[in-house]
Image (cartoon, rainbow, N blue to C red; front, side, top):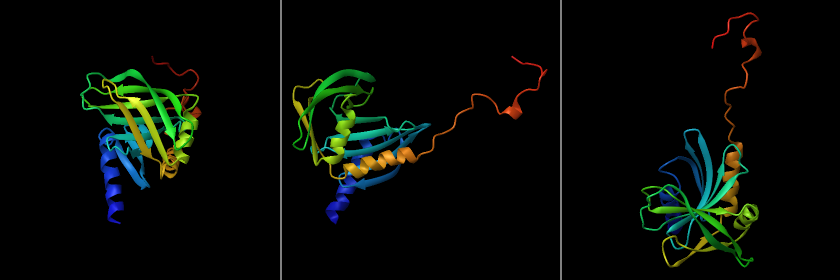
Length: 204
């Protein structure tokens, strides 16, 4: 029981620092196995995240769904490289390998995004034709292993992420996104009873 409480606490505190808690208002956090799901809001922006900590304890694997088009999602690895960044935006592309359990290894590109003043980088999976299949593997597998070279460093990074609880956490994040009402904007035309009467003056 004590180990379970420690695990939950570790996930919540670690993901709070890496998964947008500083920039976003975080709600409805729930831990399932080794994964956390939550709703994040900032102004009118809404995102729904499922995430877990890498076994090395220095990175996060996250799946984000974006409201209102909840079919759109982003698979991201966030990690600190100990070097404060001097630019914000996509700075490079990173060849990456992913192996889930004993399935065939996939090779694709991850876009490297930095934020000015932060010592962390975000690696966004870019594989349009494979992204849905990769998400399915992450939801069905036991362990995921990413391999890539950290930008600006010589060593190869091996990130292994537990997938117990991933199915429920990712499904919950998607479900919360789909259950969130779409906010109505201004109508294209005013209601008919507010249309100006014929012959009324027109003001520019």
